[in-house]
View (tube, rainbow, N blue to C red):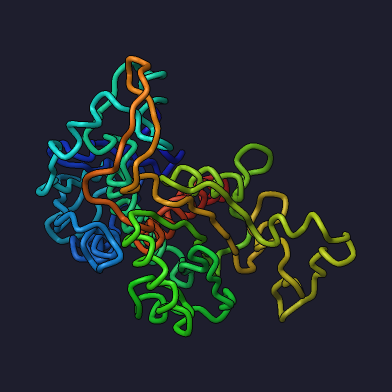
Length: 361
């Protein structure tokens, strides 16, 4: 199973949804980077369950423990960093009925088809609980880049819930706006409408999908490798590996298909000694390499697969069955997916920055 991501800044996540715990091993972080439990915990708190009425009521503190790689003075040692979060509110019995029944649009059948065995309680590795390791590692990547490239920043926000869209643009979004409401949208005028849509779906036993937008500001030009390891290709790999993420756009994305070259091209100009573009249809990446403009991403997330309505399915012995969802689930994954998107962006940037530094020295 591929649980490793990255080339020089490499992570390996481990653990199942209802096992003893989940975590990550990070290899390749340079030494002497200031890092504390608090920095990692801050990001995990944004991802944890039970933080509002919009999320699963599973009660997990998601308290991180650092097992290795950090000195007593709070500096990275350059050795592997191992992080653990223990599961304290696992209830595998809630899934007993689903042990032999394939949940629609979940990974139950496909895991059986691939491995001939699966962790049926909560989906095992297919659960979004696996992303705890990604968020913890993303906090480490963020701490590293804040030392090596202090000006760089990553912001993600919910830009669509169901049919409700935000009109906020990437250049005006702030961290404070995003964290000021439980939906984590940047547009305060529609936050309540989005929240009510999610609560309405939950009351009906249903779920909602939507979109998350992300902007990477002040990324230095030159990150990304041509051909197969283009920066946008790596970002697509990272984002589409997030549970429930079904679509990825960079810059103009699919809208580019309806434009002409004369409308879509980004003309260059000089701003002092810096090369700039007048427009940013490229989304900050050209030829797979960052050009110094804002990197703008848009991600589509499907509705949560577990719903509390009867659904037709089959068992692992190929018999027809009817299943009604049980357990504790988010009616919409978007609010808790925001820090996951940011973490994956930080991980991609950390890896490509170290790769660029390796060929520059």
